Length: 353
Image 1 (cartoon, rainbow, N blue to C red):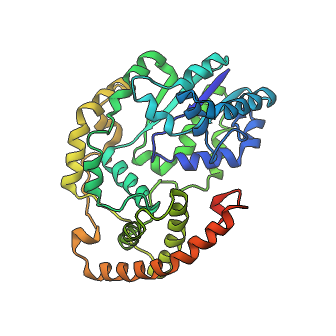
Image 2: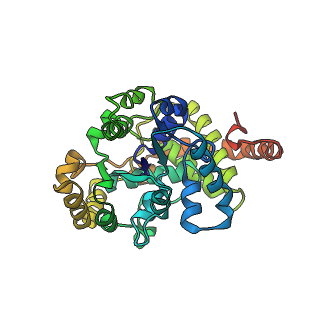
Image 3: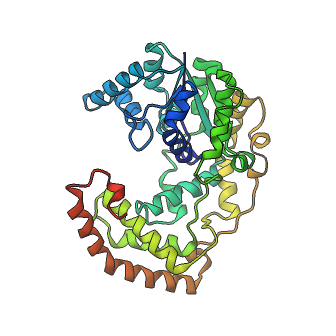
């Protein structure tokens, strides 16, 4: 019996996939594909994967819940998803989740979606900014992670150990247009001989088809400014909820903006050059082609940076600073409301609903 493990990477449409799986779990089970929901946290299985990886007693209840769920729910195949899994699979110790699934009697098949690093870097930066977890520039983020970033060739031992049971897919322009949901479910159709019935679920996706952020330069500056003003004051949960409120208000007041791009062509080329050798190694091993052949127009693209500080956009900076002052004035009331509700609120995401 198969266990399909969607392992990420981060910023390759994972949230859209997980939302699709979770919302359609009952219908997928009717097709024989079980996506455990009772043992999922935030609609994915990162808690289970971390509990197994660390072998901590803190996760024992979650593991028991998972085992009870798969024992009582009928299925022909199991489906798990957590982009964090790719983080450990690119390291020498690999993923203990794979070992655990095999011990349960399933045949694990791991799917990893790779993305070209310049676009991924810009997307990761926006993720950090819009959750009020980062206030510096994109170049500062790149420099801070220079010593900790992992090359894709870290997956090579997994290719050797799993063979055809680890599947790499290029999250390129063609993939973004067609949707990662359809690509992934089509692969499961082939393995389970479902004649396209699983791929049909892709039409139900409510996710962003291209996994691109809608934050513009002014909103990015507002969020960076907010992060600097609340440094050390709020918990991570409070920052996340405050960010959602700030994004909603700023979007209404500022209106449509071009999507933020912190890259220029020279910076993108430097990122490409840094990863070129490792990218080609993994591309040859996974697809028997070069990275450039797999990613096409993503490689060698030109970029126009629109960061307000880089471009010196005075009007944009003035608008952003005015919005920051307005939000800083309103934030204490929002946070007090949140803290009053936390005692009885089971889902923190509902606090500002």
